[in-house]
Length: 551
Image (cartoon, rainbow, N blue to C red):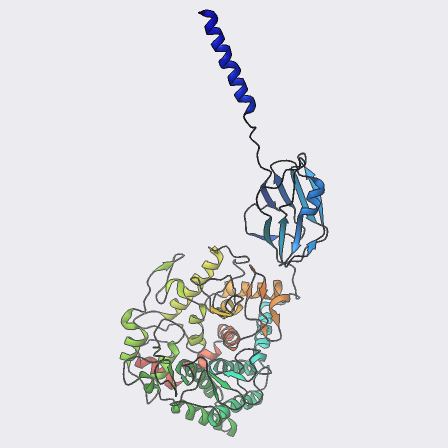
């Protein structure tokens, strides 16, 4: 019996050994274990140095000959960059460095070919690996340092030229954008009139030159421009005055664009105040005629207690777009309330303020926002109407408008500093989201709730009255650090994207205008003082129950 049991135990032992001997040895696939660029292991890889140290750790030693062929740094769209390669940890760690410094603010790729094999000829597990990385900004100054005051002079002087030397030669109106040919813009030209006043004030041109240019614009608007119940279209042909449709149903009057033009013209009327100069007297009379010609109340569409944005000779009121707040159009209600053919306060309360639904009341980044959409919307809301309306001490039952504009600006700033979507370049010196060109749809109203990674210089620069420290820091950064990319004939180009490495080469009237005007308002209050001195503006504010130091 004992012998029988021993035989069974021996059989079980040999069977166990046989089973163990035929079980396949578990083998870890040859694979990339970790990737580090400079000191970063987190993708996306932004701010990589021009001489990066790229460390690749594999699960087993690599074939050196295969590695020199199958591990590459490439430019985008794909040229191989000559690189040096070192091997450590028994060839399981590969250190890759470009032979020459890479170009700053440029996208590159680390490419690991699927054909890569280990020292024992195991194939790389999985598909080829492509990792994008972006080199850091060259932090050297692109231009000599000057005082902040001189820098503001320089920005104003270059931006002014968009509206002076860059204007349509026949009408003097501002081009919609620097590549728009004969298309001129009503609202942008209103901003341009204000920019010309700054040019006179800063001695970029003489008073006589400024008078001649604005007189040419006013003559064009009086004698050539097509109008509809006294209102101008969004776009016109700068040579003939014919309407150019902005969209299918926007082929006639645009009341908001008209308000921006009147904002500029009323400032010009107050500026050219000589009691004896016949040219200035004539200009004032022509501006008054254009002002009185706008039938503001007609745009309530039969007394519907709101203003409507558009009227078309072909489509009538079909677009049916009410001018409701909070957005860029507050000036429209103020001006429409200051004319003999004015609207009533009920139109403002019901239309613009939406019976109080204009209020926000929430806090973002610890900053209470009185009005408007979540996070405040694009920053041009705080600019366009306030190129002339002075928000200092301006208030009504819904908000204090200095508080409103400052809150929206600082929320926009705080959002960019927090950078929740992890875009490249955002930070305390590089911020500002507003409507501008972009490299996705061509143009978009960028904001914290529509953030595509596109920074628009006009956003921070035009916010200088509200955020002088943060805006000046941004202006210095844009000029000294990015000036070789975004500074040109007419100042800063419209937008840039450091995540997808795109720099716009165009300028837009509605973005250039607020820059020069709001810088000047920050420095001297020039345009604020001019518009707020208008009896029509004072009447409009009083009719709408505003409070202001100017009233």
